[in-house]
Image 1 (cartoon, chains in turn yellow, green):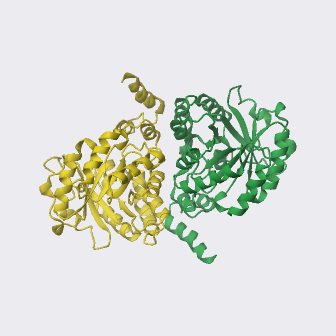
Image 2 (cartoon, chains in turn red, green; image 1 turned 120 degrees about the vertical axis):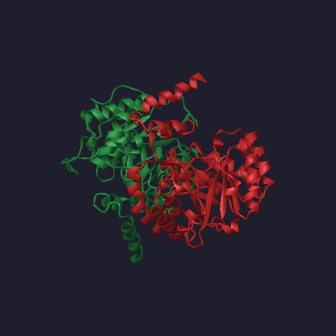
Image 3 (cartoon, chains in turn purple, cyan; image 1 turned 60 degrees about the horizontal axis):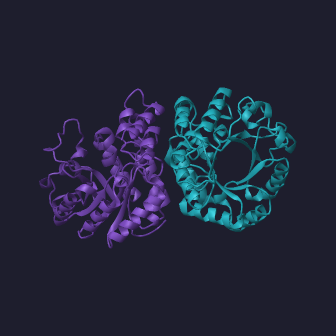
Length: 314
Length: 314
């Protein structure tokens, strides 16, 4: 699949940090940075920009906050752009310097549909400071159509560059991805459509392909699929699939071999039955993540009963 | 997804046996049988029907041969039908009793396009003995279109019930699956189309969904995705996706918890970089399986170089 407009955004450190509280060494993050630009990745998302006044930094790694002085030793001058994510309510706009004083190129705003007005305020603020912006509409599988339509109508009137379909629960399949990408395209003429897929039912890569087919041009992925719970679309599969000659698989294989195989032996992500079940049931994976921390982590029937009995009570 | 014509065929013992030489205990196979019929699976493929005159049984488990007296203690009278697979050149037709004297309901004939005439001879023979038959055209991603078209034309003139798209190398993605399923439908009016997907690039489930969308009604899967190399479409995901009320997820979860989590700790299958690479490169996974047996099993760059250097020499 080749289309010159296609861009790949790696969110390994940002989304992977959700598993280990961003406890990545500088050496590790440098290795990721170096491999990603050699691979031809267009954007590296290096973490969250959170306010230390709102979230205590105790026990959290630096990539939860992404201070400029922490990023600078990692970032070399390459063609690869740097991005950070902000969450509604956890960012202090005064922490975000004007683009000309920052190593960051893009700020991504993660929001639920209900917070779209707050997200749009941040879009304006960060655009005015000179950044590329994206709005990542999370948990889209749980949103009502008319609410999403209204949010997209509002977004269409902003200067945001990219609007993302975010399958937070990894519960969508191809026909639903097609429906959403087509909806975004129809509501947001002239804007780039992004996809951020989770792998609960092993559909993250397939859904990313589906979104490409229907016109998404900003593609999120992570190295070896690292990410909370079942993880994300594996970058190595996406790079192997895309035909743009700028992409190289070899540096990425080296990174996986040297850094990610050992890491996967220390922290857990990927396809596991509890994550599959929350994906099938279109639920947040928080109960699955909780059960994986207990000695009942492989008691699938008991866990399934707990999920489905709860349904009867609703 | 609901369509009353959809049938699910589990090939856990047959395809999983390719990893461990069919070294499954009777207790294990009974557990699989019992869970599958409670899950509502339509067909269980219990192994291969190979001739002991052609393949020595030394070191191979009984499910490589599927003698009637070995199947009988496993099979109870249920709605679930039993299938076995034969390979061209490894079956002695005299081993296949008439259906009325067998516990088997279906014989599946695995073939390459080049052997389609031999496969058609076997279709006639097994149909005449009273069995349902399928023809599973392997390695379809490596076949030329005109050769496949000719094979399908020949198949259309037989009494075979089902013709399978078999993505042996796990190298196909949705648009290619759509193309093949539509081709089968156009060449084989009135016949059922089957799908057998491998998971090298995490697309086995997504490709199975794609084939359903375009009209495939016979769907292969295995418990927890067990199978040679990267394995197959995970049955639990397929059952969670299909909306036919006859399907139940709970007995399957119990089986995975009690039998397959321990088994996965003993034998390896599933998503691993060497299998992803053979999938991306559209190659047989045999070199990937070989490298996983060595102490270089995680030397991905070296393995990738060996695959791609070979290309240059061609």
